[in-house]
Amino acid sequence: MRVITYYNNKDVRLEERPRPKIGKGELLVKVEAAGICGSDVMEWYRVSKSPRILGHEIAGEIVEVGAGIEKYKKGDRIAASHHVPCYECHYCRLGHHTLCDLIHQTNFDPGGFAELIRIPAINVRHGIYPLPDHVSSEEATLIEPLACTVRAQQRAAIRKEQTVMVVGSGLAGLLHIILAKINGATRVFTSDLNPYRLEAARRFGADEVFHADHNLGHQLKRANENRLADVVIICVGAEAATLQSFDLVDRGGTILYYAPVSPAQIVPLRMNPVFWQQGATLLSSYAASPEDHHEALRLIAEGRVPVKDLITHRLGFSEASHAFSLVSQANDSLKVILDPSR
Image (tube, rainbow, N blue to C red; front, top):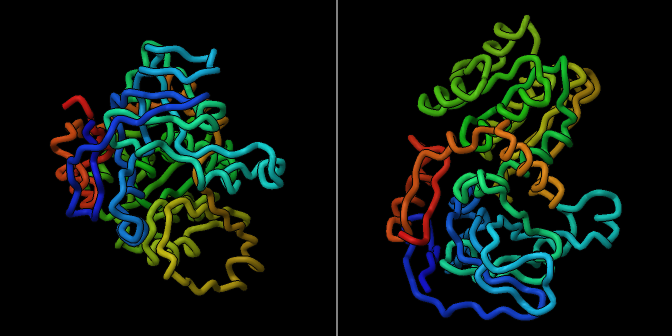
């Protein structure tokens, strides 16, 4: 079968691998669509583990069912989680499902960028999401990124009467804009350096967009009745964005760090103004639980999050190198989907 093997952002190869063999409690799934995540092109994270078959935003059709499975059958259309928690450890019992040790030990075999993938038994138990007929496989690839957004905004407790500032208007930022509106935020603002993404943010509901280089705190206060934001969501992993967050949060507000950052990033924090005087809360959010995936699928199925409109490119496996280039350059693209059948 064909797979896409990642070596680095400029070296992505179409290769052949053996068809996976499934065992008891496992599923074999024909991948119909696979989304490229921004984390797939973070070279500081990926290159040390390359060559590797990436891909965790998938949807497809079950083509083989392992012994002992009664809940699913051949022909079922599904999305799936590549990482699932155990639901039994100390962290899971406290509700910290994405901090479970098992999260980092489960994955698709060989990876989502393959024509066929084996879903391990633990993933079958906790991370399979049957798709309604009206939700396409392409749309279903957005379940995982939306689930991460759902979890993050639950942690930040976004609600009515709040104003939200989203730093970064890529795919993650746009999902946060859409979901913040659904969660009742009074006004949602965003910033970016890319005019294409700022225009996209307007289309997807941002009340006002700002160029990130132009005194962002001043722009925010001018648009927000001379106040900063109740919730600041950082969707950019750059150190400048982390530093900027301290100047955007209002008294009693929350800063949510959503984008992954390099392990080398160390940021000085001015404790007095941010904490003692302003009473700000700093949070992070990583990944999503199966419950978050179910909520994301519900939002998509009900048409509340227009994920189809976020997909800007649909490319075949033979165009994988170009697809990864689109994502890594982050210019005129939002969601890039790979189709293994092409």
